[in-house]
Amino acid sequence: MDAALLAYLAFFMSVALTYAVMCLGLNVQWGLTGVFNVGVAGFVLAGAYTSAILTTPPVDGRIGGFGMPVAVGWFAAALVGAALSLFVGAVTLRLRADYLAIATFGFAVVMHLAALNLEPLTGGPFGITFIPRPFADFAGDQLTFGLYNLLLLAAATAGVFIVLERLARSPWGRVLRAIREDEDAARSLGKDPLVFRLQAFALGGAVMGFAGALSAHFIGFIAPQNYLPILTFQVWAMLIVGGSGSNVGAVVGAIVVWGIWAASGAAVNALFPPDAQARAASLQIVLIGVSLCLVLLLRPRGLIGPKGVVRRRPSQKEG
Image 1 (spheres, one colour):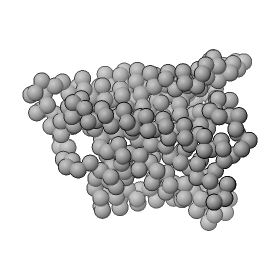
Image 2 (cartoon, helix red, strand yellow; image 1 turned 120 degrees about the vertical axis):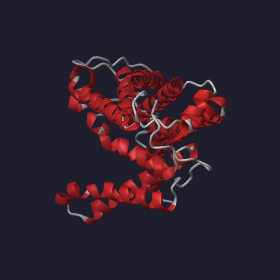
Image 3 (tube, rainbow, N blue to C red; image 1 turned 120 degrees about the horizontal axis):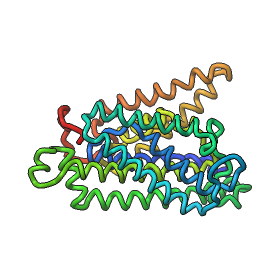
Image 4 (cartoon, rainbow, N blue to C red; image 1 turned 90 degrees about the vertical axis):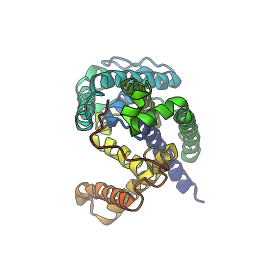
């Protein structure tokens, strides 16, 4: 196989795995617990900027640039994601599903505006550059650099997957599923739904923050435009296509939907003239929407959804 093609496949899978980690975080919140979070982009942004500020070299006129190790940035990103989730969850998890969606979306908008306007800290619309990339010494060899990054991201994704899978199969995970299916029955057994939902929301936020840091260090540059609501749409589409409630489905869905997104982007570039490509790019969203409709019609539980899932009652509260 051609080295350039292998390098592209490594890049494709690396991006897909960063999305897979985001999906795993959302699966804890929605698939396992039933918490409707449409502020995914805000938690990913928080993790990306936290790690970038801590690990980049000093820059005149910007707060941060502490030059810390990448591992420290990743750990801090997860902590910040968990802390923000605890704060947002404590305020919003008593709301019903539709109000909870509005509240979490508002959080994502606030985070985006903060990144856009706090220029001394975030770089404003210009973002943060010179984010250290693992294996930067191999950047001259595209294939080697891509394969090393793919192995690192695969290891990180596998680590998150194993931890979440164990938690899902633990008594704690069974309580979350019980709360998702019948909150009143779980409460009658002495389980506080709000406490358990807050724990799941914080864990999912930590995973999303970690995913943001992974993505930032893989790309080497971040800007507020990377964290628009379309990111939340993509992650939700990936989880629904793969199978909400299944960690395997979250990973598979991320790869499949990212493949559709990348293929449709290539088709737009090939079929439309340069001056029409910006408008034609909206066809990518249309294609993802059509894919969602087909999955919901043909496989309502997703490509690899959990068996025996009972649909939640529309009147059930989100806390």
